[in-house]
Length: 168
Ligand code: FES
Image (cartoon, rainbow, N blue to C red):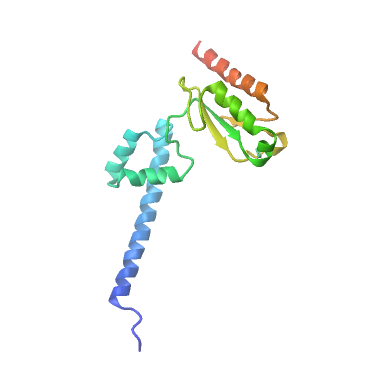
């Protein structure tokens, strides 16, 4: 009878299984840790990532690899208001690109950046599920539709005003 199980193959299989299970265990644990960091700090600060790497005894480069793979992790500080501009097809054909330009100019930042006063972070989104009122943007989960440049700036100003009122 042919011996199917030999030591070399068995070792190779076990090594593969160890690697996979180790990988899964550490990545799912790491993701949970990164969520906690984001919950505490709003984003993933370099200094905290270094601490996580030391504590988990894994290279920082591995942590950043995982963090950048999942788009829901913020790698930079975020503003009080998250402005997401929909660049999905329906919004794009209705002028989302112009709306985005208006926002960039008005806020003085690019996609992924935060204003100096930490009031706004600008993001890009793919279909916010409101194609019927395109072009659309979302601020802190609230949808604004049928936008043009003037409406967009007016909405931003409402948030600025609200922030002023908060300070006073
Ligand atoms: S494409 Fe913008 S909401 Fe659907």
